[in-house]
Image (cartoon, rainbow, N blue to C red):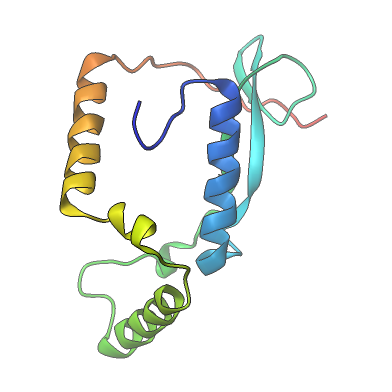
Length: 135
């Protein structure tokens, strides 16, 4: 696998923790943490004391529909505020020649193609999900 490696349970846990840590920088109230996914009698349970750990997931707050971007629903003032915030964020972020290589056309194109190649190779398994009570 390439730039994102979810090949083991431990690597998926670390990726979930990284996602929460990184995305909280711009949206702290939406990213609540990482939850344990366990195999239970009815399928899968989240943050339950019973069952074998089979995966990890990012727990997020459900955003109200009025906070989601809809076609033609965002005005110039909101976009100006958003772009200013993003520019300040990126302007204060660590940078180096090494970091810049990850955004090159070759790297992004290679990762993009690899994602499609890997997706085409496997079949997605549908599973039932039951929400077991937190113990």
